[in-house]
Length: 176
Image (tube, rainbow, N blue to C red):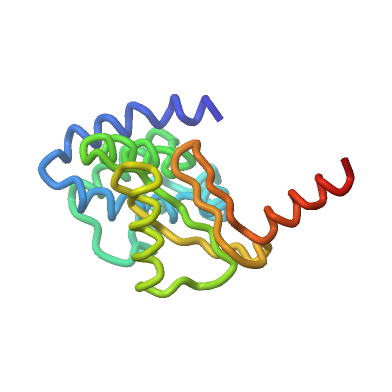
């Protein structure tokens, strides 16, 4: 999806530069818009030639959990007017990269078969920060097929201590 990354880059950079005064608030509403913009039915609705840009804007702003600030509204209108609604998730990802670079941190996704309580997540987060040697913004996603354990993805690095990974290793060892 290099094309999508290329399309998203100028939007992410412009938004980052325009919102230097309040990056964390921008990240919150941008992540929300990205989640909305990733919906296949919404994209299909927006691509309908009978639907106006204003209707798409009203729908998205109505779905948003909180009232969008003026900056968010202007950004969303620009994205819709230019037909780049499908690039919103990539814009959010690239914006997050700029934000992480400034903060000296990285995003870490912990995949787990079960919910992780706050105390356990704090312990895992501390251990991961020591392991990777940098501050991490940890988020958790459920992936029941892991059976147990966790798999951590930080950028292009993966740490997999799941039961599924161990079973796969045993399968390879037994069939070799």
